[in-house]
Amino acid sequence: MKKYLVLSIIFILSITVAFLYQLKLDSIPSISYFPLDEETIFLEAETNLEINSKANQKKYTLTWDSLSKSDKSMYLRQDVSLLFTNGKLLGALSKWQEDESTINLSESIHTQGTNYFQSISYHHGEIHYPNGSIKSIQQMSYDELYVIENNSYDIHSFHKPKTNKDILWEKGLRDKASQTLLYRWNDLVNHYQINKEDYMIVPLTALNRYNKNSLPSFSQSQTDQIIGRLWEGLYKNYIVPITYEKKHVSSYVPLILFSKDKNHLLVLFELNGKKERLIQQYP
Image (cartoon, rainbow, N blue to C red):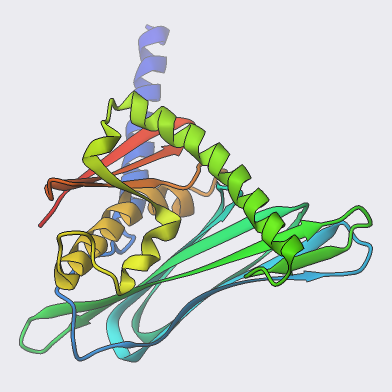
């Protein structure tokens, strides 16, 4: 009798926890793509990475900022920003505000060592018109920073190489990150038995190139819609679990695969060792 009572209590608690978690997720506004508003723009949309270091000290502070400002207040403004170091997820920021034009995301991270930092942000706005129509604006921004620690703990950083030594460091850090990511990505591709020849493959951190450039065989308008719906799915399936579960998450740069037959896209990623695949049909 006691055994059944204990099992019943465990079952009820499990259902309650699941219900409360789902209730919490339902209270989080989703990012929803709507036709782009050609009469509304972002006045600013940028991501910035900088460091603050002191001489002869091993540790330094990385400042991670994302800022966007639209030309008018909107029904809903939402921004998300992802930060990676040497290909591995270091953090995620997300914020939404109603009847606002500006969103500022900022975080300071105390760290050390030689690192290659990358951050990509998605800036989004939702506009509701009196006639009932809903439109949106969107833009991506990106920044990267190379941080070099020498033997005396002096810290050198750069966004773009200025010397021959910088060029060597840039190549070395990129190669190191690529080696890590290729191992992870190939493991995901093999797990889902994907033929890479059928896809155009783009890391999430390179997605900002499609702000102004269209995907092959698509118009810019079609590209904007594909990218908007992609971030809609990323937000729900990747960013929300990272930013709202309030626990450490191990992950690497997600991989985007655009099918060459113009049918669908795939997003491959890991969360705490669990392999995930997001499939989205093209509109």
